[in-house]
Length: 398
Image (cartoon, rainbow, N blue to C red; front, side, top):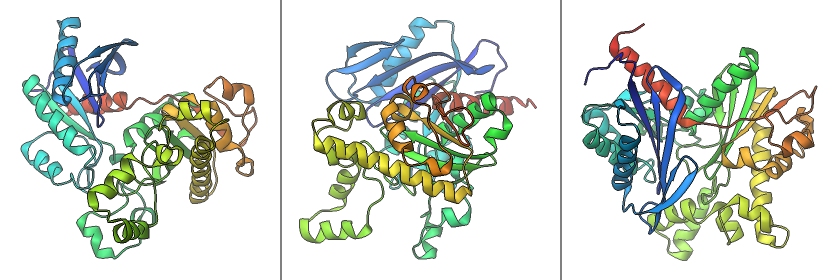
């Protein structure tokens, strides 16, 4: 399909999780303004949940294709005049080859299929959804946006893993993730605080069910906590984060673990859930930690690892000007932010208690050497900007 300059042209963004899908709609000529967002959660379970305009209702969605069809029907009913010319897909792993938005072709799909071993938890579903939207919207451009792209140019000392170097040619390296979120936060920092802040020494803590931190200097990622896969880095809701590689060998030899069991344990049974043995939900852990020692351990260990990595990334930066909390936990849990910052005064971090409790945009005290911010992230806007830019290039616009 040819790209268009039609003022009534719209684009969609698709963000898939292992059991969810979010769909957002934008005008091509205004990709910073979201027109609507809808999501289906608990896909494959009965019931699933359809969330639109803050309202949730029970529904049935046996798989991601069914959920996508449901969301598109809902969109068509509400926006009957909408002319969808493009769909942007969040792809978690681009491997060593892909680090800019790409128009979907059979060759790209074949390449991404070869990367599923790097990210078996996301890529198969994401590839399925590309095929689904090709069928549902055969006239629309399909564009893939990569979560690893933001970290593509990590310096050698951060990119290389300390293993036999020849493995780098097989794509074994530190990639980093949450790049679409980091790109959005960087633009928000530039918009509100100015170029000086955006190009200073910045640490962004994206804390959600998946969690990572990144160090930015001159608006570029110089290091990040996640490595080759999204299971690495700090402990997360159900992911372990970094582990001693000898642990895998120990469990194989003494407990009979195989590859699938190791993968399931480190991705779905560890982190907050594994430590607490109760829940992977930080909000619930905070409610029960006073009476549940293991819940308290989960909260403490999570905060400790975030805190420790802020210190390490500040060392990599040679100082710190700005710290940003984002993601579901980072944006909504004042206690976590306070506990993380508790022993970081040596870096110049000084929280204002009232501002932090209110989750204000600026939560550090006036005059603090380090500005500490809470900024809501929106990966769909980053994707919409990338897709709109691709459409302009297809149209030959400057």
